[in-house]
Amino acid sequence: MRAHFDLPQRIALFPLDGAVLMPRTRLPLHIFEPRYLQMLEDTLKTDHRLIGIIQPEGEGLASVGTAGRVVAFSEGDDGRMMISLKAISRFRLLDTQEGFAPYLHGEIDWSPFRRDLKGPERDPDLDRDALFDALRRYMDAHELSTDWDAAARAEEETLVNSLAMMLPFSTGDKQALLETPTLRDRRELLQGLVEFALRGGDDEDRLQ
Image 1 (spheres, rainbow, N blue to C red):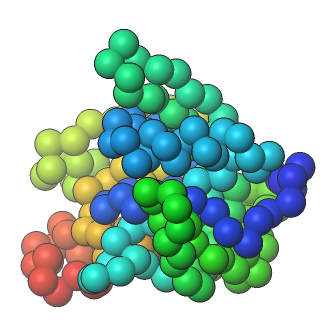
Image 2 (image 1 turned 135 degrees about the vertical axis):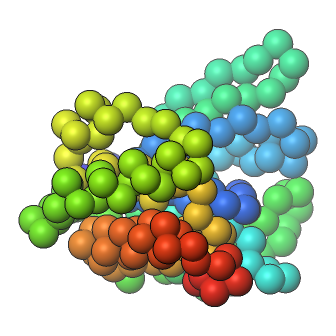
């Protein structure tokens, strides 16, 4: 999936704790803070319509985020905006920039994640039976539910990336999943996190 626009070296940043945007997924967002409503308005005036989703980390921001293109938006009666972001590529954050706008911009490097601009990845080593067995126990323990028929039909990339986004992992775990270089690495880490939780892993021992 090659972008039909030039990837800019500077984009608006939307810090969101616990939210990651995996390659070739979509993320729905409600926007209501005035500064981010301004960010959306400014973004829609650009050719690329990209917003960088990135997690806060310490006193700053994580080193890796994902640029999502605004592909749909609607306004509620109360002025809130509902948008849908389509993942274009992950990026490495080089620097943050403050200007006249009330939100941050980031200077970014796309080069570590060139693979994101190509087609879906495959994971031929995925064992769905083993993954689903662990997931069922994990979801029962956390009182979660899912559409197992849809999960069984999903392509491996859609399945793994969706799980990485929706499961209630810690902020550090989600960031580690985002930064994995390949789908296979992400699936292995995801399974490891699920199995660790099933063994009663302590949050303080989890990835930070």
